[in-house]
Length: 421
Image (tube, rainbow, N blue to C red):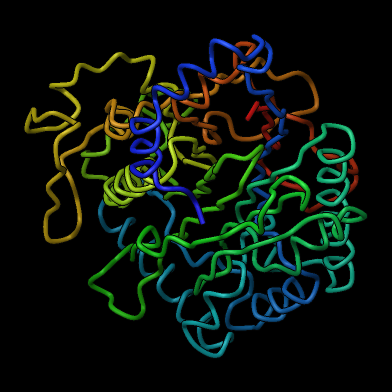
């Protein structure tokens, strides 16, 4: 059980005179607690499932009525009738995929037909060839994770875009027996997971899913609405003190604050469907962080934020501009009937000073590590930042891949940091 901060404070107050006496007689080196360096990584593995999961994906997507169609509507510029045509096409594809899968929930547990790259509907590769390509992806994931553990001394990994515990065990490779695993239950293919070296914690790790984060994208659709990913907390006892890790994979499609590289810059109060969904996740994250801070001042928020919070931090947004009504971001957030809040900025809303949060900087990425930039982040509480003897920094580690594989290992590189606890 994690010690209560309140009870600890009472103990210090009651025995302060005794503690003061001890300080006078203890040698200086005995008064400084030794820290323990722990390597931590975040890794979005891009629709990682087992080979059997992939075979089911091929079976459904190659059905004649589906024929590798894309079930999500593409953004279409131009007349409304073109936009309506694209929406109708996506709806027809979704209905065909649902029927081929055997129902809505069954479809949700299968990777979309476009998940591993576009397939030619006229001349798709054979099933055996696709399975071989998927095996190459899994081999790349396994080699990448084994490199993180064996050569980067990583002891805690927060995974995103995984299907199950089984695939996490597979990518841990030869280190699987040395790690504990937990996976957040979810009613769709993608979820989040943790793997941590058993020797890291002096007590058994405790995992608690945050199902509130898995909000329905379109609440009006009822049971047929897709839900975004849940969150997952991992509680460990490291070097005699509790530490909590919060793993997130937030709604995609509203990443940029600043327009660039073909992506429009948007605030979270823009009338964009993706931004509205991410906006609805903001108060859930904020409540979660504040609750965790009340139980353990040492915590780490990490994962795929799908938002360039570093851009938001650099923008220097005034407190009066964070919310559209000008209210203090540290004050209670009011939600409307759909769960939306008046917060235009993610970082300034959650990093309102209560508790204090710090983004771990990312060092320049070298060759061999391409993929999405600015989406994966590591955020630490102020007490953890204060413990570090050296300035905090993180870096990306290249993926292991074969230049001939047609299904890429991932579209994200792992991001690693060493924290002292």
